Length: 211
Image (cartoon, rainbow, N blue to C red):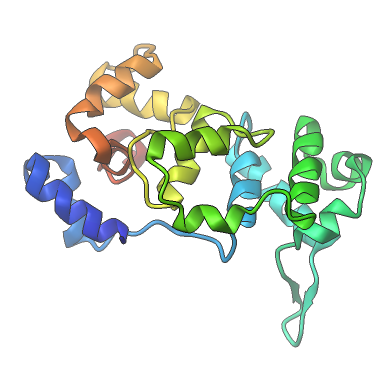
């Protein structure tokens, strides 16, 4: 089910027309970008953890430059196949791609996918309850609660909120006048949306973000 369809359910179940989420349909923002493979999404999500967005973009660009295959006639390269990363070494990931502490996790992920041990694409059609699917994602080295919630959104499951330092900052400025908040504050603010709270958070019309 698409994010826009799920948001339509939110309108019916939660009355979100009376909240800042009501702008989602009017402004056609009811979509979540997804990569061609879940492997790419997992890698990119891991590269967003504990760093600035500029660093995330740099690491992705380096990864593509070092391991990506050239795209004919474009002068560009494709996102690397897991086999290309698996055939390399952690040292290359650290020194040339400059992913820091993420090197072991990324190399292990690529190896597991390349060898067929980890069938990420199967998760796209999984019938597991969301809580159990989350447990499967958390088994991946480098994937914690924030990363798992982000990947669940990509997979069409919105039961969890991807809470990181930016999420805390958004909620802090939206409702607490910039005072420090915890993950519990975030959860409490979106509890009314139940299984759709991840989408409600994602599509909220944040005032702080617009400043």
